[in-house]
Length: 329
Image 1 (cartoon, rainbow, N blue to C red):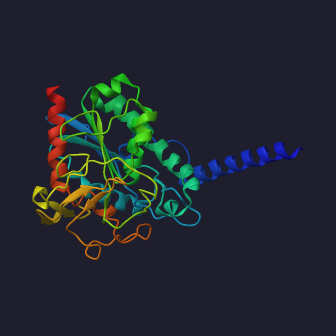
Image 2: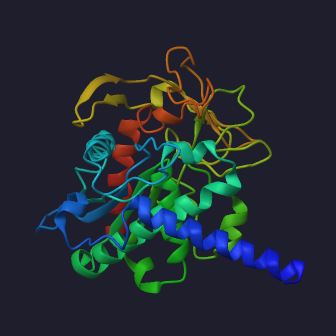
Image 3: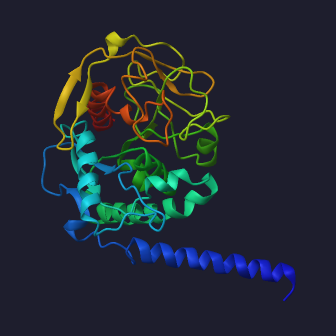
């Protein structure tokens, strides 16, 4: 066999083996989202709330050297999954029915791999989210306005959903906004998907809301690699330029537990501004020592785990503002 053909054959064989191993370790075929057990939340009842939220949980699965995607029957991780979802659920509860699928998310160990090796596991996770969202649209939505929301890996998968539906007029008619908190979104991505829009203020609809909290000295991170400029909106003044927002605009940082209870609320905890170079949201009144990264995939000064917590009340208010604005259009 000529060298070029042999190389192609080996490459194809490796790809097939990866697909088979992923299917085996993560639990096999498509998840049946007609089964309520495959949803952390499935609020498909009549409600006076004006909208729905489809929420995608952040990474809680650790993974190991032989397992890179969560298994649907992993009861311990499902408990963490529900807890992490509860930590953000209160931001949306006043205004929307809540839908949050369990999915075979990529593990933390995936983010320790080189960037080129992560995609196979993230794509596997996204296939579940895509299936769950299709089930929601077909069986639960009934023409209701909806919000997409997620954090970290969940935000990444929200953006993937938006890209897949960028040219869908029916989707656009019902889409209020996407809160893709804790993930990067670049101007180049918007150019590649003309149907996507980034938020420009506090009440525009059909838009993406995103930011990444950091200390001013950070110049490289997992979410915003060096040389990348991400788009961002400041959740305190709802501006996209570098205008500083004083901490007096912070309606309340809320630190929640796995039951969703607010254990500590601190009004005016911190101000923030958007860095002109990287697009990071620089928080101005907290220290890296007081708010450590916890996970070893982030260095000190990356406040990723606090993206929702630092600006909890501002986000809660903004969800209602955008849903009301959508209803008035």
